[in-house]
Each structure stands twice: as structure tokens, then as C-alpha cells.
Length: 430
Ligand code: AMP
Ligand code: GLY
Image 1: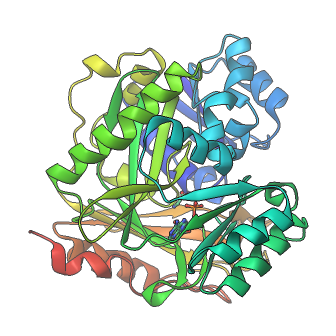
Image 2: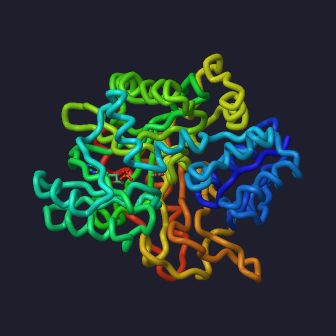
């Protein structure tokens, strides 16, 4: 069968690579893909943007794809799954109504309040005067969030009230994030360690994926501005059986049941970004309605079950009778290599060296913002350019192998964090 992946980042390269290894899959189409998917065996790019929903529907129909998997949030929030369903085409991802969990932080916060799901105390505002009055009454640090989609960049952790006031003003005036900032959420700043908890949901039943963590800040030591994620690893030694059960019982199942009860049944990958405090209590920072990027890259490196079969089981509401997923009992680490300027504006077109040649066993370079130039060379084409992944028996081995791969790749202005996975090293084997 033929399958279609929508998107063109590192997550989508990993999804396409994993689907292409599935037994029943003859060809994976990617719209629009990147240079990595262009060069992947049994994978073909099609020049249709991830946001062009009518063209995507037409493409899936013309190409006779058995099913489609959506990578990024924007088309999900815009209703790509609804459009595919209307056309009778199976498409894995939440409907626009269910994707509002990510599309509107104000909706997500109100939803959590309705269903008793633990999260930071908050208020939502579309008026600067009211937001300012609230901020003045609160104890900093405070977190100010643009309501709508902002590629993981629409959040400011403000150390003082003045900083918080400024952030709210920039967002509500439309100066930062345009439309997405016309409403803001002001919430208490949670302390602890962040965890990415990702599950696949078929409307009712839930299969948790292996544990993972990413590094959101740009610089070593979790300093600098927030990004979409500078690296990730799986498993996350922070997650023991007890924490896993608590997240399933207190967060994931209540979310899935709550959405179904509100007439927005959820199908697809559901990602709860959590803060786990010193006492081990998990709280939701945000929901994402998709796989994480870069979490998907190390996760899919470890997945030994057939990914296409897993996607089909979710589409056919068979997750409840699926055998347990098979994960390599090893660690996987992914280190993002970014272009100078990221998470701000970046220049494109720098030639990337070091990609060719045989890939060592157990390493894989997933492409994000890359393209092929007229001479067939791989050039930079976005902020997060590559994610160098490696498997190892222990986290330390996987890290070493991933960084060895990073060291062999060069372009003008490339940068990456040196400490991906470092915070979990001491915890391994416990
Ligand atoms: P979000 O897009 O809501 O996940 O926010 C992006 C990042 O901002 C998170 O991954 C956290 O690093 C940080 N963040 C968001 N909300 C809070 C909060 N209430 N307390 C502390 N940090 C937060
Ligand atoms: N790595 C964070 C995200 O995918 O939103």
C-alpha cells in the first residue's frame, strides 16, 4: 500500500522512515517533505504544502493512498482531518474540534479546569487593562502565553511583574505573534522537571508511547529563549511505573474521556507537556495534538513494532486489542543542529557537508529544515536543520554516538546544544 505523511520537518522524516520500514508499505509519499525524505528509499516527496488542505485531499485521492498521517499542528487545527473524512479518506490525527486542545491555550486551560486535570493556576484575557490588573496582583515569576499557535515560541517566563506586563502588552497589541496573541493566558510558574508524555488515542482507547524528554531552551543549561526543542531522548529515566500510572490516570485518560464527553472525540497522537515537581506530582503545561519534534525522532528509532500497523489500528479503533508495543530496550538520543539565528529569523541556502557516506549502524540523521538545491546539494532551509540520532545500550552510549555524528557535519553558522540528555545521566539504571 501507499501511505501519505503531511509535513516537512524532522518528525515527518522520522515518520516516513519508520513507515517505509513497515511490511505492508510499498511507498511513502510526503507533502512537502525535505531533502532527507527526498533521499530516503521507498519515500517520495510531492510538492504540496502542509497547509493546502484541498490539494492534500486531491493528492491522497489521486495517489490512492491507504491512509494519511499528519505531522504538524497547523493543518490539524485548520481541519485537515475533517476534510479528509468528508472525502472518505482515512487520516490519522484529531479533528479541528479536538485539536483545539493545542490550538487554543485558553480552551485547554478551561477544559482542564472542567475535568479536574492538574495544571498551573491561570486566567485568560483579551484585554490589556484586565490582564495588567491581574498581573499586578500576582506573585512573580509568571508565565505569559499567546493563546494561539506560535511554533512553541509564544511563551514568556517573566521573572518580574514589569516583564510580565511588557510581554502581555506585546502579545495583546498584536506586535508579537499577530492573531495568535490577541488573547493571552497568564499563569503561575511551575517548578520541576519537564516531561513529554505522548500517547496514541483511537477515540476511546489509549496506548502510551515510550517515555521521552526534550530540551526546550536554546542554550546549554536550559538557558536562553524557548525553541521548538533542541534535542530529545527516550526513555526518560525520570519516569518510573508509578509516575507513568499517575499520568495515565490523572491526565491522559481524563483528557480523552473529557473530550469524548464534550463531543470532541480524540483520535491521533496526544502529547501532554508536563512539569513534574520535587514531590513527583505531574501537572500539564500544555497539550500538543501531534507527535513531538524532536521527541518523535528518538522514539521512532526505538520502535520495533510496525508503525503502519499501529497507525491503522488507531484509525480502525483497534488500539484496545493491540499487543503491547515493542520498544528496543536501549536508549536513543537526538541532537538538533540549528541554523544561526534560530529561534529567530534564519538565513537559508548554506551547503551542508558531512551527510554522505555510509551511516554507522544505529545512527540516523533526520532532516528538518533542509532542501536540495539545483545541483542536488543539501542546503539549509529552516531553523532546526537536522536531528542526529543514535541508539546505545545506555543513555551515555547513545549520547556519545549522537555527538560523534554531529561532529562530522558542518555548515556555516550551525549550532547545537552540548548537553542533550546530560540531566538524566546520573539517574540511569535506578
Ligand atoms: P507551552 O507552549 O505552553 O508548552 O510552553 C512552552 C514552554 O514554556 C514549556 O515547555 C515550559 O518550558 C515553559 N512553560 C510553560 N508554562 C509554564 C509554567 N506554567 N511554568 C513554568 N514553565 C512553563
Ligand atoms: N518538542 C516539543 C514539541 O514538539 O512541541
